[in-house]
Length: 434
Image (tube, rainbow, N blue to C red; front, side, top):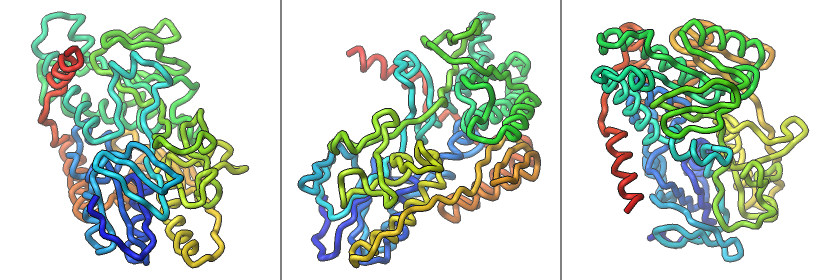
């Protein structure tokens, strides 16, 4: 990997997500040689991926080059690579560009979409964990609108204008609201051949309410906001199959659709090589102690979504969202400094800053401890918090001006089919057949 030899202890971080970034930024000026590995050369601000997929933002507004972090220190290095496995006995990491040794290893690989073993959904559905996937959804939505304009087949047109989102957590709720606003504000102007009432957005949730992780009060408000936007909500509804055309559920509901988006859950994205005892198999996450050390290893740590730290308050581990990841990254930086000085490690204590979700223009819900509120003020708080946590001044500025433009003009400026998704999918299917 062309990493120079150093007398400083080497910390290797796998993953440039919220956890890995928080740790790297805190260790930049400390007495470590820092190596950051990721399969992308940028950090993705995942909470705003849905705005890329619905043409509100361009991807460079929510992505930040990882080399902008490492360039601030001559002791810090970034390598674009995919990690294949770990040989812990030799303190060695294996990648597609070579092997690298470590003194301390931090696994911050995050999570991946959980299909719960349903192969038909995994094969035929859309999901949204990365920028390319968000761009695929954007292209698919716009391509289906274009095809709906020219088709004279009533059933085909109905399928093209049916949008099905599965999972009513924050991602599903925000995505449903954004597509509804696209229908209400953009379609009448851009697609005069389409009656907006023909465009139906269906949100399916297996539990009895939307936003299950949030308070019942916020759930009820979000439900009302979605209905005001014209979203059809189907609760206690589990998707059993999607063959690329028809959605089948555990109820009498069946929907024909060309746009099926899966946002019903995530699971850990571990790296091969560690002992089975290190894994909590059901969650696919590494079991860690209160210092984020992986079970059975003293110099291997896991932080963020991939780490499962059980406690009385969080028996299933911390929620797989940005705040625990950021806090664990910052805390581990302090503990690594203590470790090299042979000082006592401090246990991690998660401070829950609250949960929020936006449901379109002037509509959001916020849970902050005992304080729960919704509407315009919650929407304003949501915007402020997301701007604050975006990495990079340029990203904050561009996102802010995009939001102002969208708010004033009821418009979305990034309605571009840069790389047609359906054409790419056909090519991929041909390649698979070959």
